[in-house]
Image 1: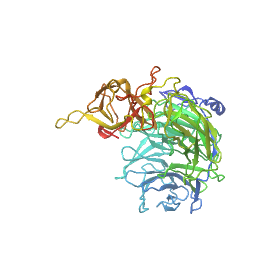
Image 2 (image 1 turned 90 degrees about the vertical axis):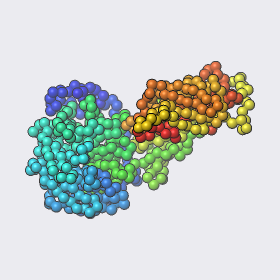
Image 3 (image 1 turned 120 degrees about the vertical axis):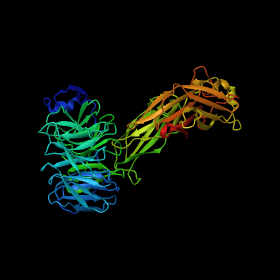
Image 4 (image 1 turned 180 degrees about the vertical axis):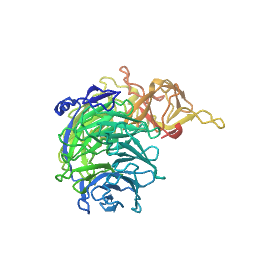
Length: 606
């Protein structure tokens, strides 16, 4: 295993997972984080708090329930709380006084399951009736902490004071315990990993471990920073396990397959990152009770944004994303808080078409959940160019001009933007922790050719419309009795008879398979054979080599003639009159067809 800290590789001892590497000064670790970026944003009016009726309840962990409400534990009051979107709060006392409920998770049975650190029990509450039932753990004084639903349908929990991982069947209520690798361990939080294992933090041995729910084998991996106190843990949308290092002011990440471990320092010292969850934007959101903030880590560039919470000493503890797309958190100050992230809106779209190198503008606004402009936002907004319709590829052109501007009163205005190469593009706007937004397509025309006036194009008129793709079909081999049907190819039907030399050339078509993985899109080219039927005015596209199309993937077919320096006519497949194929009736040569791969691998046109 190689462990990484801020971009540097540090060898770790694979044979002794409990070994603690020598500590480095915190200042040194901060200087090593070459990729580390940070911003501090004040929370806006979308932050609301609801004080609990029970004084000194000590709310701890929070989770989204199957009923659409948020459920949380009240450690000091020995109660389970519930809040809905209208800020209505209900509280339910546990049967055991002094139970100190801590972790909470939704179970596969539709109930909420929670740990009772003070009573050494596992509790369950019916969200419809509020009835609570408790089940004692076999080991007395085990102090169960974190809990999560496992891939096997059972609830898995940590036993902080018993160096064990527990499992309870939600139907039979039988509890099993499995000892960790060290008697000094103190397993804290637990999460279901993408590899089918249960991953947990262990501040007692300064490790991150995992357990197989079937074989019950346990492995642990040392954290490079000694005494880091790993605490909360969650699975990110990137397929890695992310955890907080409370005493080291860091966020850690471990790859469940390679077991490579990285650490990212939180910019503000003494922040004490505690709980962590995947936010509505796919980033990692975590609480910082030490400095009264929320942190947001971008899993792509690993930048960290820290956001202040208005009330002084509110002490954010638990954090979860609600079904309403908001971020909910508990505050040790005895409140439940909800943060509705702002969103970006393109209020003035870029023009289309535009000429190569000619300036244009657009406007992006920061909108609240109610649809109003957040006039309190004056932070930076940044633009990035991507290709369209293949959103997964690198753009062929470059976006020029001032690409980052400071919003004024929630509005960012861009002017004199340029794109230096012909094509069809979209522009991505991003700002802080908000979800990025796409503009509409921008078609960029090639520079005008001086001194050449093609007579064929001049003959076009309103009464001489260009050809278009009018139908998209999926072709299958003949299905034998009892056999599944197999994909043969695709057919594009044109509105007019085409020039056979153009329409039958494979070079005039590109098929791209677009896959989405971990919130990112990737494009894979598909080789084609092309045949043209002049009578039917149709083109048959046959994939070469029997490629595999995963369920849910998209196929984009572009019919056009590739640009040529010696071709003075507009690019595109032409009909018998020399009129070029129209690109979606926008006066741009080229046309496209889209297919989506349905369940069972069959393709349907769209």
